[in-house]
Every structure is written in C-alpha cells, then in structure tokens.
Length: 166
Length: 209
Image 1 (tube, rainbow over the protein chains, first blue to last red):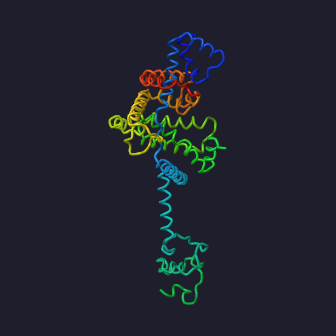
Image 2: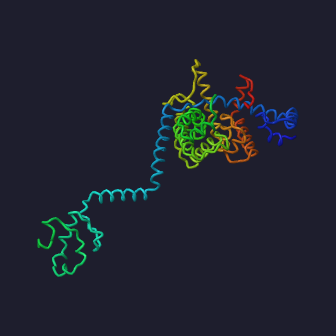
Image 3: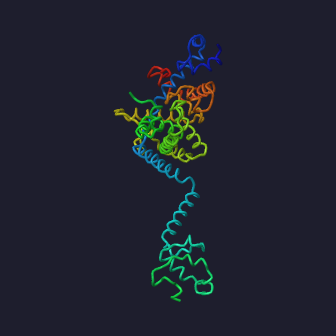
C-alpha cells in the first residue's frame, strides 16, 4: 500500500469501518510512513477540536411556530381539497350567489314559458290570475276559437268565467 | 421503549399529532444546529428548520419507510440550505454576523440565549480564550465549500453513516469519502494552531465511530 491508497482508506480506518486484511495493510503502511501517521493524528485532533463548537439551542418560540405553520397547512389542505383552484372557487361562489338570488324571488315574478297544453297549467290562484291578465284574452274572437282554454281549471262562482269581468 | 423514527412517521401519516410532536422534539436541536452551521445565521436556521418540519408533515401521506428517516429529513434540510445559500438569501446576514460578531454560538452578545454554556465558573480570560477558539473553529468549518461542509456536519455532528450522507448529498460512497478526506485535510491545516494547543492539553481523540 502506498500513501495514495492509504488516503482513500483513511476515513474508513478512522471510523472503524476498515476490517480484516484491509485494516492490516493500512496499519502496516502507517507504521512505516511518517506522513500518514501525522495525517491520522491530525484528523483525530480535528475531530476532537470540532467538539468545542457550541451547540445552538432553538429559541422558545420555535416549537410554537412549527405547530402554527403545520396547523395552517392542515387548514389549507382541507380547503385546497374542496376548492382546487381559484377559478373553480369563483365559479362555485358565483353559482351559490345566483342560486340564493333565484330562490329569493317570488314564484309569480318569474316569467316561466308555459305550454298551451293544459297538462302544464297549474290550478292555483296565482296562475289563474296570470292567465286572466294575458293580453291575448282581451280578444274575444281569439278566445272563442281557442280550444286550449277549455282546459283551464274552473274557479269558484265569482271568478268562474274570466270573460265576465272584462 | 422509545418509538423509532419510522414508527413515529407512520403515526404522523395516520393522523396522530403526538407522533409529529415527538419527532419535533427529537430533531429540532440537531436540525437547527446543522442549518445554523450551514447558513451561518440563527434566525435563518430556525426558519429553514421550520420549513423542514413543514415539508415532512406535508409529505406524510406519501411516506414509505424505505430509507432511514434521518436520511430523508437531512436531505430536505441540506437541499433547503444549499438553495438558500445559492440564491444569496442569507448573504446579508452573513456579512452582518462577520461584522458585528452577533453570533448565537460564539459570543454572548446575542439577544437570544442560544448557546449552551453550562454552569461553568470559568475565569474571564479562559472564557475569552474558549470563545476565540470556538470562533476560529466556526470560521474554519464555514470556509469549507458547501458540499464538504454539509458532509463534515452530517458525519461529525449527526453521526450519519457513509451511505446515508452519500444519499443526502447525491453522490457515491467513494466520492463521499474523498469529499470528507479533503474537508478534514483542510480543517487540519486551518485548525493547526488549535490542534497544537489541544495536543499539549489532552490526548488526541479518535474518531467517534
């Protein structure tokens, strides 16, 4: 073994990882080489000197800050799972607002297109009044030949014939 | 019997907060010390150490105990430290430390009581000598190239095995041994004045493994 080979084995030797024949070879070289002896002793001394470096203690706030950041991460994760992107978040919010606005409107105010067939006509009073006020009803000629009106539900005596009121 | 790192990490994965708390207690000091010696600033080291814990927590769902927990954790820490040094985030702080000596470990001027000086009743003179030695050691370690510095810190202070350090630094074991050899050789030269003093006062220590 020459000095160059010994340099490659030096760390393993000092860490006690050099065993068997390799170790014997290294020690044989070491016994005959002043330069390598000096280096081994120097490395051992460096190891000891490095122990003098003081140990830094984390500040008292360290744990609290880690916990706070982890907690923040947990919350972010929950919302992040529900709302994967700002665009989707905006769309969901817009949809919610629209739904709330629509549900707050009174049913009579919504202009729902209705089929002329009686199957879709509601029999409640509001619907009946709406039908009464439709402009088309003002034309008697149209009404008399308008078969669909025969399917309008019959109302109590006072309102039974809408045309009487006109 | 204390639970292993892997057991604790699997606990974190299953939503057990106390496991994370134990990992935090177990590794806060080694992590802060490693990062402090890497980036040379106490506040920055704590900030980065917090980031390491946060990343460990974030990755809990994907954690698979294939490698040692410490290898994984120090790989995160090393990458964070190297990135921070490379993008110059802490350059200003380094200068301020060098200029003012506002070092948590090497002197007593820091606002935060971050060094461990046990209840020693040393004379002012010997304390000054000790401080001066610590400062020289700190500077010698800091003057090492980043990768060599990380290798020495993980080898000397964290007592990681060669395969672990090689994994952290992303190199082969033989490359790591070469890296460590060069680092300790530089330190041997840089710290020669301190080594002579030490050899007179005490017997040379062997490597601790």
